Length: 340
Image (cartoon, rainbow, N blue to C red; front, side, top):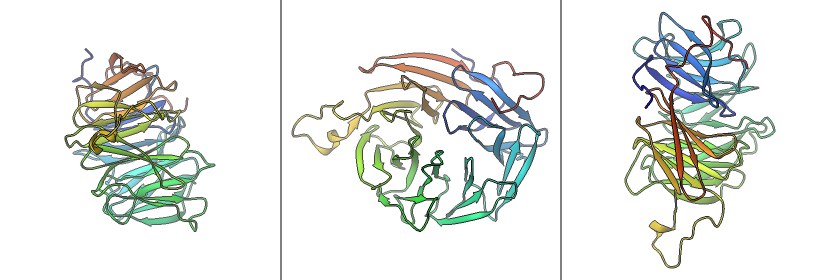
C-alpha cells in the first residue's frame, strides 16, 4: 500500500483538458503530474502562501491559480495566470466576490462566481465578453468544451436543478435549458467533443446524461439507493463509459452503450435506471476520476496522495494498482516547465 500521509496538504486536484495530466493546489504552491505513466512534470513552491485552485491549459506553460488554505498566496477573489516558462504571473483578474472555479481554453478564460459566470478573451490584456447569470453556485459548476470548433459552455441555470447551455461562438443563439433535477446540482461534466453532458444533484443517487444540442435525456444511471455527495463525473474518451466518484470512497463505472444492460420486463422505476457494471473502493473519499486514453482503465486521484489505476473488463472484473504521487522524486532540483 502506498504511503498516503507523506507530502504537503493537497487543497485541490484538477485534470487538464485532455485528461493526461493533473495539477494539485498545495498549501505551499502547486505541482503538475503526468497521468500515465505517473510522474511529476512541474512544480513551484511559494514561501508565503497556498494555492486553493489550479487549472491547466492542456500541457502548456499556463496555469490559472487562486489563493487558498489557511495562508493563501493571493486573495480568493483574484485569478492569477501563471506562466511557468517565466516563473511569474502574467495576468491578474480581480473580482468583488470569491472565485469559485476557473476554466481555460486556448482563446477563453471562464470564471465562475457565486451567481454569475464571466467569460474573457485569453489575451495579454483579457477583455470581458460575456456575463451569464446563474442560481447560487457555491461549487463553481461550469464546463467548457476544449474544442474550438464547438464553443459550448455549460453552467447552472437560473432555477435550481436546471442546466443552461451557451454557444460562445454566437450567444444570440441560446442553447437548451435542461430541467435535469428537482434539487440543486452537485456535479456536471461534458464529454470531450461537447455533445453530451452528465449531471448529478445533491441527492447523489442518480446521474442523467443529456444531448447538448437538443437537451434530450439519453439515459439515467443509478449510483445507489442512499444519498451521497458526488464529487466527480467524467466520460471516457470514446464516450462509451462514465465514471463517478463520491464521498462514499467508491468509484462507479457505467456503460453508455445501448443494449449492455437488460432491464427485464415489468419492473419498478427504481430498477429501470442503469446500474454500474463495475466499481472499486479508494481510501480517501471525494477523489477525482477519469479514464485512460484507451478507455480500459479508470484513474482515481485522491487528496491524500494516492493514485489508483483500475483496469476493468466487460463483465465487471477489475485489477488495481496504487501509487503515491506526493512522494515521487522531483523532476529536477529546480522547477520544470509545464510544457511537455
